Image 1 (cartoon, rainbow, N blue to C red):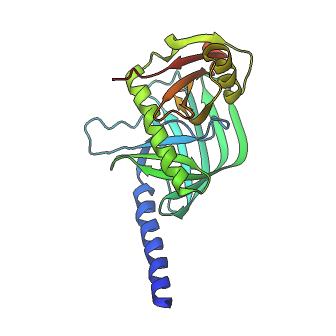
Image 2: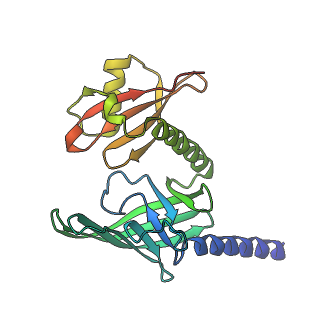
Image 3: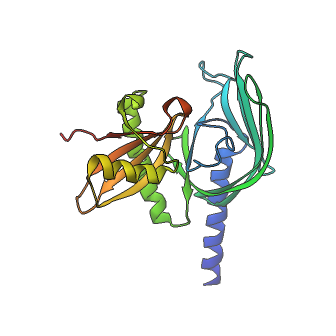
Length: 248
């Protein structure tokens, strides 16, 4: 029994090391600068930046996970007339499928308000969802692996929405509210516009820096999903919209 227990521990450690090696010292593109938004932190997407690829670029949003368990996240551009956010923090491999993130400091310079903020903020644990050899999602985790798997599925469903709609989310906004909280806006929209009583908010993720897309499930109806689009930037402030795939 002792040998079996030791073997299991070694497998976990070895698997964790393999996964951490996939992250360590590689140059990843990232969907946003960690720490720039401290409210909507449910998911980050990493794209492996292959330096041998002819389309490789040193510009854009990047993150590097270092061997000392620190990370550096930054944005760069060819043109100097831009806003340049960056952050530093720490990470820890919890096991082969989970990582914790702690952001220490956020900075910003360029054509925007100058910032230097000591955040010292724990973002919690994230489930490592490997979509392919070059794409990894970090999905906020509560420690329940079965829920992690569901969130992985829900995230992919929202990806389907983004793929179909593209940049057309603003065209769907037809409802204004003074509420600031995402869930409260959803509840008000559904109550006023849809008249649905039994539903559940399954998952929410960003589309770029302008929209939150929430996947909603109609209760007691199998495979009945729809999307609520919530605009949180000033140019679409407090506007809400709806989308549902046509059934084939």
